[in-house]
Image 1: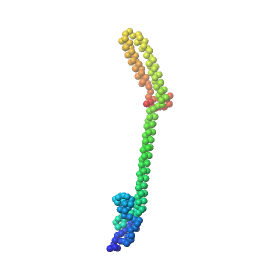
Image 2: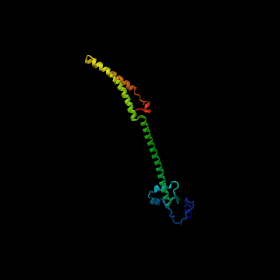
Image 3: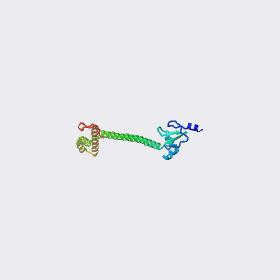
Image 4: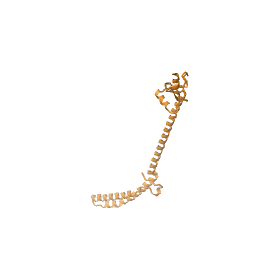
Length: 192
């Protein structure tokens, strides 16, 4: 019967039987002992043992863990996995920063396309005011007509005609204001 047990006692380290009278190998510990030493549950240690490269062997149908090689291997796996996750996180953060910078660049480009320098705006405004002033200066003809009116009602009617004439002149001037700067503006941006 002892021969039969020795025959069934095989290891993954060479597939040879362990002698029954041999003392336990201090470099190999049970799953429960490995879990206790590392500070995790026996279920968790079993999950680690199932990973490729884990320093474990099967003896008498039970997993044994090479000590302290298993603890070092597990630590390397933890650090390697964290490094891979942190590299992925760093790459994601870099992509987010790049996208944010690009968004700001687009917003600036959009603003630049709709704005013009203040000096250009002031010059254009001054030109429009001069055009409007030229149209308003024609009101003198109406003053004479109002003075020549015989009644207040005639003066009011003439004043209303003057207002209508002035509004028509101003509307015409507004229609003549270009959306685009002139050739002296040195740019082709639209006023905001």
